[in-house]
Length: 120
Image (cartoon, rainbow, N blue to C red; front, side):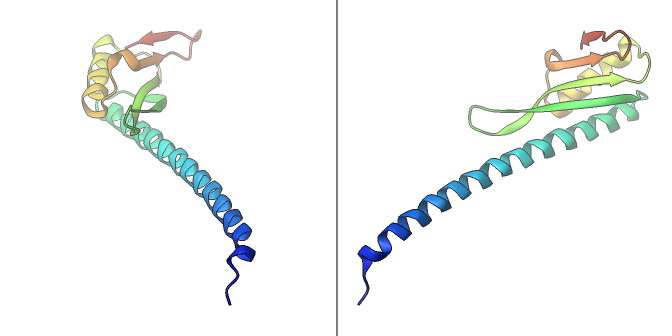
C-alpha cells in the first residue's frame, strides 16, 4: 500500500527546490542573452565603422528590456581611434540608428583625451 502522507513533505520540498532552480536557470539565461546581444552588436558596429573608414578603439553596447520583456540594443558608447570628421561621425550614427535601431540620442562618442564625451 502507498502511503501518501509519508511522501507528502518530500514532494513539497522537491517542488520548492525545483522552482528555485528553475528561477536561477531563467535568470542565468537572461544574463547570457544580454551578453550575446551586447557582444554581437558591438562587433557589428566595429565592422560597420571599419567598412566606412573609421577605426574604433572600443564599442560598448548596452541591452535594454522592452515593456513586453524582449531584450534589445538600447545604447552604444563608441571611442574612436584618433579624430574623425563630423561627416563620418554622422554617417556612422545614421548606420547605427538604421541598422541597429539605436537612436542617435542614445549613442555617445567618447574621446580618450581628457574624458571628452559627445552625443552623436
